[in-house]
Image 1 (cartoon, one colour):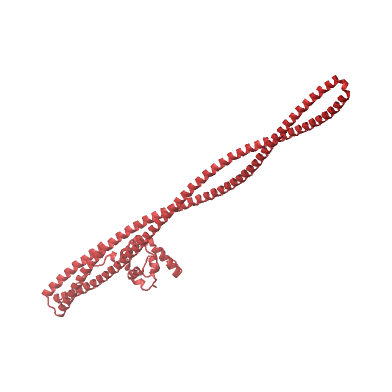
Image 2 (image 1 turned 135 degrees about the vertical axis):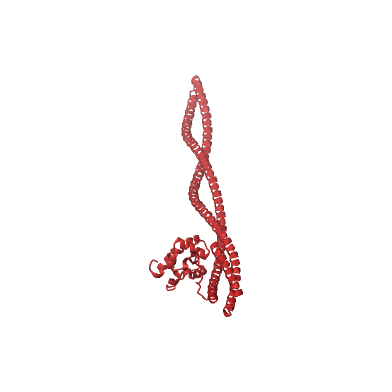
Length: 442
């Protein structure tokens, strides 16, 4: 760009020199039609010089704007790169959080399964405890009935003991009576009658004693059964107390597990909230990236417009070169007429290699080749395609054979960065398009 501006300034200086020479010729030579033609050419040249100055001013302004746009594009690319890196880090963090969430969810499922099994076992324990409580209540009722039976038997035993004591008293009375009967032998008949009554009463007493002994044996047997039942009831009470202790310990463990599960659920809720926040941030960053991409596209469109304007300025430069050449021919004709001899023509300044770039030897050969739609390559729009056609580039094969130096030259012509051409992979895409269209490698 600086070299191009320097060349424009050199052309302006040359044009000023030519204008001075033409003025001197007009003051010193009167050649009729040639003078009039030279004046016309001089006026046209002055108009072109004014147009060139105006174009140079516009070019300087647009160059400054292009530099600003390029700096903005570089900043946008840096921001885009940082955002992409941050987005990649966010995506990695999101994947880690999703993996951790999956592990937590799996653990939560396992814990819920364990909790369901524990609750089922607790319900079974509760059912067993209810059954055992009912059995204990029945045993307690049986114990109360046994105690009542024992009390009744003890009352019967006291009654029997009282009757035995009465019988013993009666026997003692009978012995006393027998002794008295012996003393009273004269009353033999009465004694015989008393003995008969005494034997009857003795038989009754013995039957009563036998019945009492039988009742005592039955009472002892029932007391033994009640003692075994009481021992079994005591064992059941001990087992029930042990089961209540185990059940309370299990319930304590279950409550601790439930509290732990609730903490894990709260942590998962926090993770879900963090995930939602990260997704929202990612969406915001995505919107920012889309806005930056839209802005980059706008800047590229503006850059394309500036490139077209630069090409228009190049066309004007070609017209100015043609006018200079014509002016040189007029000057030569004037010198021949005034001096009456031949003057070697003055050579015009040659264009530099940077201005010719790829337009040189490819222009004539490219006209005979078939033209390809260069806009099919990713990153080349219609404006870039037209500019490349003006540079003599019409086919995919030409782009496929670019070297890094060619990329730098084309980037300067298109007023874009070489990194953009490399990033969009124009060369590789041109090779692929050529291979698909012609069935051969370029």
